[in-house]
Image 1 (spheres, helix red, strand yellow):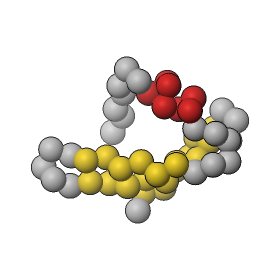
Image 2: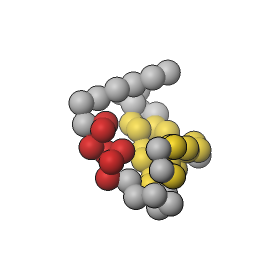
Image 3: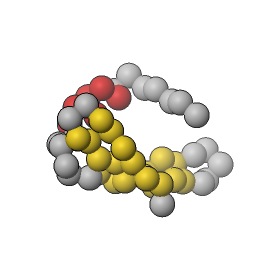
Image 4: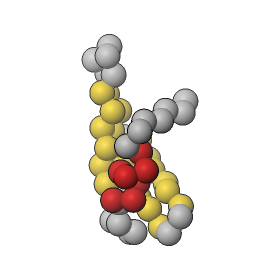
Length: 49
């Protein structure tokens, strides 16, 4: 699944290299997914928990 929003670029640019960020997505049905995201140069990686 790919999702985009108008503020995505600003959020990605605010993440500092090597400093993980926790992001939680909340869905209309009540479920949520928490990701830990990290940036290294131009590469982004993350894991769901």
